[in-house]
Length: 366
Image 1 (cartoon, rainbow, N blue to C red):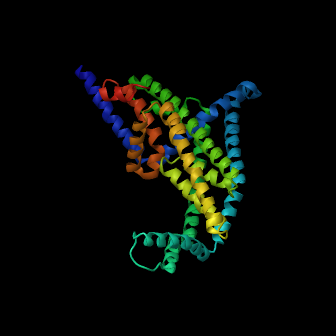
Image 2: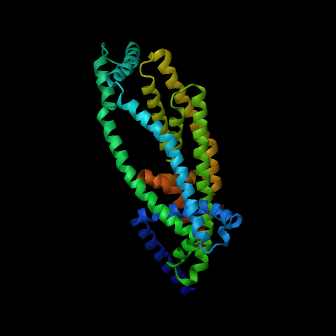
């Protein structure tokens, strides 16, 4: 009994140390995990190639098949890029040519009326509404120089994205080529006595993460489709561009939906800058805002419960607290990886520490 307890404590300390190393090298670990997920998504395609084409009879067939799967993924990325880059360039061109003085005047007029309305009802002190002051405030919020800084940061980020993509695809190739490479790599870090338990944990984590990421793709596609159809129905310009951005940014829990709505309102504002505010611009802004509210309700009450609760088998409150912890530890990045990380930790706890009551409680639905 004492020997077993000592072994359990030693394994627990070793696990904490390994988790510390994983956090310290989190960028490399992120590449490996993304490559692993990519290989999981590509495995059915590779299996189909090996079974239905002559590749299965070739000595190097698996290597060629793995390469073709990654080429297919790259092709999909390129198609999306060719589809949306012209929209992005067009929108950037609009933003860089916006008359920000006119924009300030457009927003100053309704704000001035609102301030006057507040004053008439005794909610504000003072008799004059300084329109120039309002205009200066609006211009400070949308300073054109900030747009240049944002674009510069975006272009600098492209370099990091490209490095990450090359790294991920290179690793994913070997995960596809050698089916048990990931499993073997994980098992090499644990004592031989625990190899069977580690294999069980990896298989269960693989199953849950595959469901989670598949659900995230479904959620993203659903949000893009829902927002695009409604924006198109009401005649909002650049509906596909707004919907695509909103669907992508929505993967950031809670904050993403707000950023998507702000982006949609800003694009609508800049595309209809010279229209009469009360007759045209205001109704369009209200329509776009209403569409994003409807999309948020769909996401909160239909999509998220199905994906976060059903697919990773965790209570919604539990998921919310995990997001808060992730945000506290690593900000937006922490929120993005909170659920996958928590899923893996729950599986590890279930396999190795199920004798603890709190672990049994947290993993009883798994």
